[in-house]
Length: 162
Image: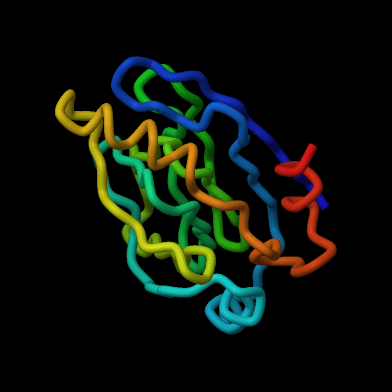
């Protein structure tokens, strides 16, 4: 299994997460089972769509994105972050506060998204008036109980607990 991790710092607009890193698994999904897999592993609020074409983050929830069709270049970590090519079968587990944006994608690009059970997402774009509240929110978001793909024994749990 190929796992990539990225750690981003606060750029003054996108706070990113002070402790947790973005985790990307390559070629781990089967399209038909993605929604069920996330639900089985305790990730709720499942939806299917694309990724917004502007920098945004969630201060009240971690997020998982599983690519079920097509491919895209996704910028993680804000304007100075990392552009990552994602394709069908890839999964990104995004800590609260980490920015993400669809830079370009194929016309058929689609992801399944979800959040750890009990976490409700917000939509933040880095506006100055958001700043004080989001920094506190990010610090309070609990770790997920399970890896969205691999469950109890998934690499995410070890990576985020170290």
